[in-house]
Image (cartoon, rainbow, N blue to C red; front, side, top):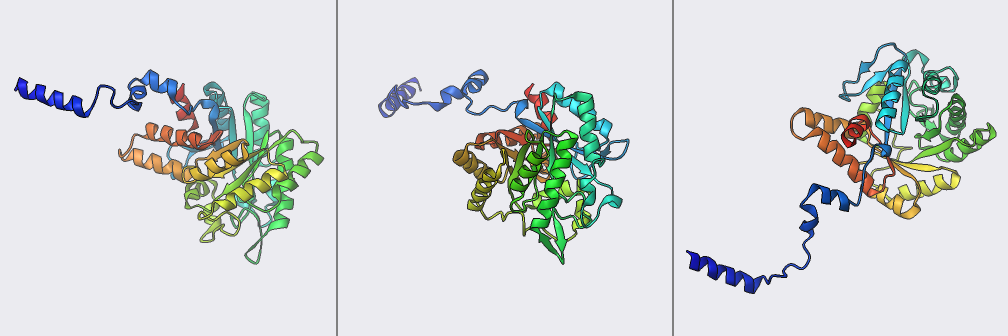
Length: 344
């Protein structure tokens, strides 16, 4: 037996000399501390933005389609902002759940300085000062009775008329105290109009985070349920203004236009199915580029974890890490507090 083993060793040495292979990439993977040292991408709590749903009720309410996420009262938002501070999450993004009685075809409640999101902004400022950034969506879908992001005429979205309302909405949000307005409507020319309106209102320090590459995705379903716009929208879709998922070059054109119009940062949505777009934008423009891990992406991970098919925390962490690897400077994710705790 020993003789056969010796013969085998001698044969192996002839085929595989001691120096083979010269490069062994596995050497730098063998220890956790070593993998950490050579990691090309690092995810930290400061890379996260926490989207929060706020409603005009005293109690928080769970969202069935988004396990672990709730519609928060203003007091609940304040507690979440305090938690964000403790976890080193630098900013929250606010999304108002507007009562059906306040919705209309012309979305006029979006221009009310005492509406829910404006009251929430002021409450955060009074409670927390400027210690946490506030990002506010600029779009009309929470306020329209038909669930679209813009004004309608005989079923057609009115681009320029919508842009005029969005510019006024942005000023209302900036005046209330938000740091960043984020037009997510995908109307043409809205960034330039919002920039002019902000500057005219002496809100020139308010940033614009443009949803520059927002695809017409089926993965927004749970978000629309959370806002209550799914019922309003019915069987209609948003394909005449949100991008076709088949297109990549068009995303580059959208980003280029929005940057030329004055956008400070750009957003890609949904994130995990748009890693190629994230990469192209970051490589071509080198500007602050955000990714939105949307509700459907979040809920799929949660559903699979609930069924025991995947390890939820590990899957959520991996999903964010690859977005960062693709080029995202920051990520909007409902996993933000959980991931921040894991990273800490």
